[in-house]
Image (cartoon, rainbow, N blue to C red; front, side, top):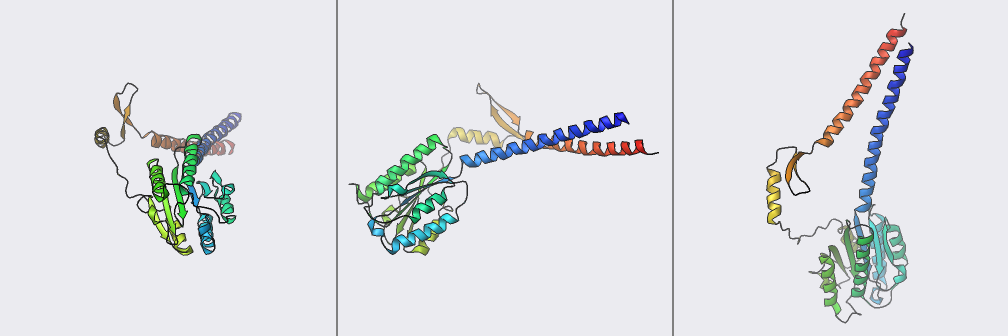
Length: 288
């Protein structure tokens, strides 16, 4: 009976150890998922025209539309807000920072010129800084809302279009929104362009931002990539090409993850069966 109790205690200890190992592995995967989410996502930069021409109903409509859009924003994205004139309301990139942007939008007042080029340059500097110091893996999407023309830079609207093209070359998607009949010079230069003449149209434009996918991306495959794709397609199922440090290539299986899961399931089944066997033996030992 003493040996039976010792075996039972040993079984329980082993069972706890295996359970902790399995749960620890699940926790490790959760931490990796959280780290991945923190490094990816979309980084939004909003450039808001707060010049004098936005006075009256325009500003009110724009505020309402952006408030509606920001309140339904998805989590795990970064937010940056740059009014063209009220620099005191700037919001540098903040992860899940839509509430900070909302507060800045509510405080906006109009007045001043329309320095679109200078604001785009400020935005580009902040995007580069974030890529270098935080993560280079985010999708960067810049929303430019304006109801007028460039009034500060000597190059005028062509300088705006040149800066937009520069941003696109740096993998920044630019969504231009011309408000109340203005800003159409962005059409053809911005990655996407929409015209909005009231709050409802502006809300529809903002709702389409996340759904937009560039249609003018040209994918080019090099001869080396074509050869690699041909080698991969000819591999047997469950094999992949692995290159060694000296450049030599060989086949290697990629079923280790599934095999590991199968082995874990086998361990659990062994533990359960062993538990019931011990119970059976215990009953036989104590029965008269």
